[in-house]
Length: 423
Image 1 (spheres, rainbow, N blue to C red):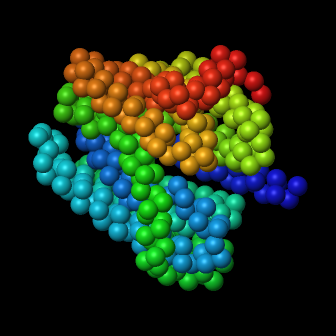
Image 2: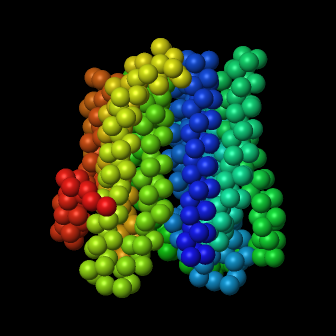
Image 3: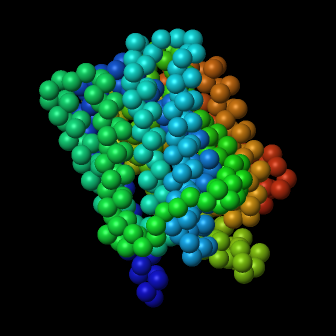
């Protein structure tokens, strides 16, 4: 009973965090979008997309196994110190890759390469995220929730100030790494207050080698997944213009706001899948069926009202100049179904250590996304990018299960959940 209460309390704190991020993020995001306009917002979105893709290299694949490693050892300080060093080294690589990329771009970024460089500095503070992994291992997210909320409020205050005093775009770019620095400071303080100071950090080359070897394939999966989600925002300024990217970035924000639904369901019910796998194949399949059904039901319940409300929300929060984002937002909202299916299947593939199957599912969708982006964006702009995203996410999360005989069982369970989800 005590463990169950602790888990429910943890979920409640995560829900508070998600709600705060959504509410404040939407209000401040709308204010900034109205002030900057689609073109300048497109330049900022381009920089954020680049940072998201290249920062996927910063953990060298260790994020997915960090909590497991912390739980599996009594030497938490050594694990934390090693993970921090790996992420710091990876962050430097990510920044260098970003600089190399913008130096060879065959097109102008509206004269704002400085925005890309400033936003890229955010990756330097990602090393402190390992403190979050330590709290996850303790099933105690309230400390990290406070850290994220404080950083969010400071970031919001900065953005409001910049709008009120009509500061140029570069200041809004600086607000992103500054918020990351505040979050890192708050995490460090929380770690000390929670008793983490009794685990002095130290680096172990032997452990670092083992962690990187274990996580290297997961790193490529992470990079491929992030490129899949953000590549359209890289191509839009090239195949269309920054104005289209600014409008499309609003559609992305509106649709990805719903991703918390499968994320919370996954965090709540995926552990039951891992436990059932150790008991029997029958129990394992039963729990997988339940997980898929809950994810799909949650998606259906989120999608239906969102499609109705997305137009009025766009006008109310972001303004009439972004009303063109509504069709793309609706298309991307529908893709939540396939995001949920892919998330459910990833729980099984990672638990079974079938990382190559996981990698090839993501790769198939990524290739599909690039091809469709190149074809559809020149003709339809952001709406074309949204269709490319929907189809490629369907390939990644669902149709790839049919292309691999080893995943046919998942294809059957996913199809059952799509057609007749049950609690």
